[in-house]
Length: 365
Image 1 (tube, rainbow, N blue to C red):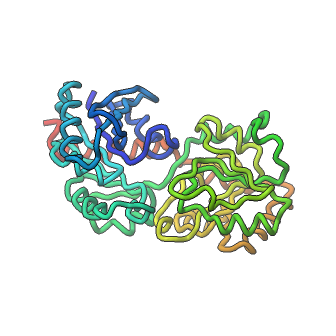
Image 2: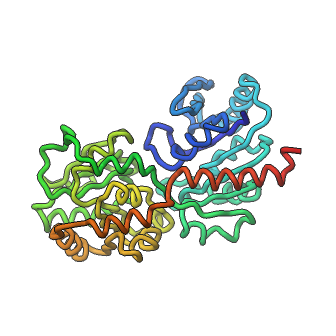
Image 3: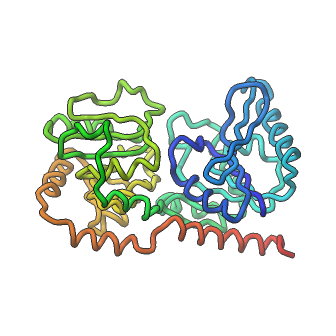
């Protein structure tokens, strides 16, 4: 089997999202090595196996003492130890070029899932490194159509692949099961959100709606990163349940009444394509979203998701949805819309593009 070396800014066990969905599928045809950003410790690496992936955890003693050179040497040692000579490089972060620019992959893939330069604490050199990565890449994928429009003129072989879904997993939420112990005491109606809680999260909208509708309860699932947890609104009807495993999500959301795509409109959300949107819909839950471009089009325009740009419209849509007697027609429309949407299909389309690059590069000659 051929080898993929993936360099990511995300820990494998942080949140199960786009890299995990895609690479676990590629692992059926490749040996996939997933390099996390380094940990502090004596210069070394270790490999653990999870979900069919080899996770390479690098430790480096001092990030400020020839960091790039030492990282490069550890990666070279890894390749020698594992007797890997032929490989593809798959990038989620351009920052990895600082210590991988010397590598000579058969194919270079850049999966630009977010506009990382707009995120809080983004390194100043990220844009320069991304430009270098565009020049090296044989094929580029983007995490949504808005991001594709922003970057389509920067590469000759770039393709949009918006967030997809694992339908079988999230449709489990349509089958009622016993509620989770840390949620069972929360009254209805329940408005739920799962995902990373960071600078993209709309703190002020949650604060205002929770004050104006004290009888509504808000269930928030996910890790808090890059913001002070003290900034989050606190109230009797807001319930922070912390991170949950991917396998646990259907059981939680099956007991929600309405799901939320609760993102603020700012520079860090301009290009995002939230994976949770089709996941909520696949679970059979109505969705209220802030006007994120890749949610407005297509989900809002197809009347599959409510788009609320302030607390007034949020409350109006919530009240409207809670008064409905049946969601049957809406759910039929949802299922028809999502019929061809799956991570398996995304994987197949990406694979075909990569195979085309291999043939063009003469790898099979």
